[in-house]
Image (cartoon, rainbow, N blue to C red; front, top):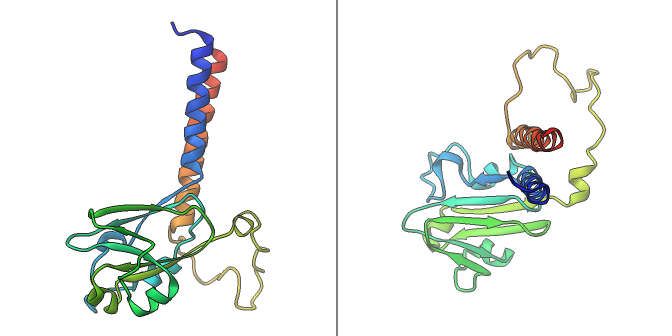
Length: 184
């Protein structure tokens, strides 16, 4: 049997790992489509996709692509599809980028014609003060904001609700580790 000190370290490391998982989320850029040149028949642009998600410090974005690259650039290079001076460049087909600060991040395809066709994205990472202090709840009244009593459909799952579910699950798992440690 392991000594109490080793068991405590294992529980502590497991809880620490769970806390890291709870506080970050991995987004797949473009969902099933991945990072590819737009065809014109796409249901949404990359910026429309980004606008539907809430990005936080510590989150990651995953770019899946073939015969292409991902460049992180400044805003002027984003606007002009300038590939000559990127902040960072990835060409491996499986790029994961982690957000280490709040603010705007600009990504373009390394193929200038792909970028000009719309293969570029602006991601806004929220400041921690935006994450931790939600605004007031909408009024249930009839002023256009709030609950629609004529619509009884279930709300769609978005990145925030998925993050909540994962956070809840990881908290339960970490709690079970602590309980098992205390009673064994």
